[in-house]
Image 1: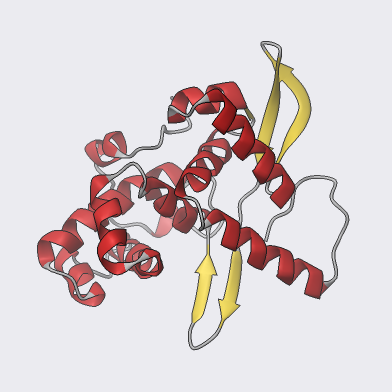
Image 2: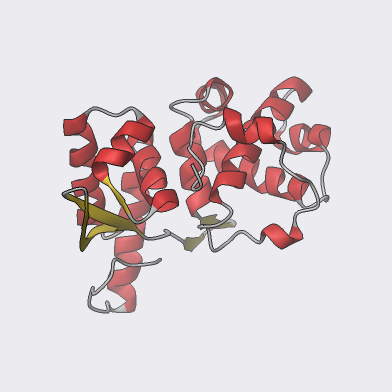
Length: 209
């Protein structure tokens, strides 16, 4: 997992434990995951700008920023913009091995965060649980690479076609926003061009806006 700048190296055991608890914290609150994603996409940025983009209350935004700093995934850079401190977030990446390997990435975190703002993703989580988001992201990425169809995504997830199509379209918009900051994504392998409407419908503001 990426670490905040200037943080001393950990032992393997300590790093693994930190990774686990960071993932647990980010997946316990979609609003925290949402703000983290905004900071990551727009780094360096101010908390004020982030709260305006995410429409988060001032006190809540600073509370979440401090939580992210405690987790070691965001920190002030030491520079300022319009009198406010600039913050930089680091991509969170980790793999856990159990019955199957699970890779945590900024895109998976972003999709979880988006579930608090996007009706299709929120309904999908309500019906199938948060754990269903990771395979939904994986199948959507397979679609983007030309390895899967929309209906194939639904079949792989075991959901009705309409639900699978709606969820994959919602995730596709998030993928487009995260493509430049998620080290696990390789846009050069995508054969499907994300429609501008999917990006516009994403709850996240692209980095160039």
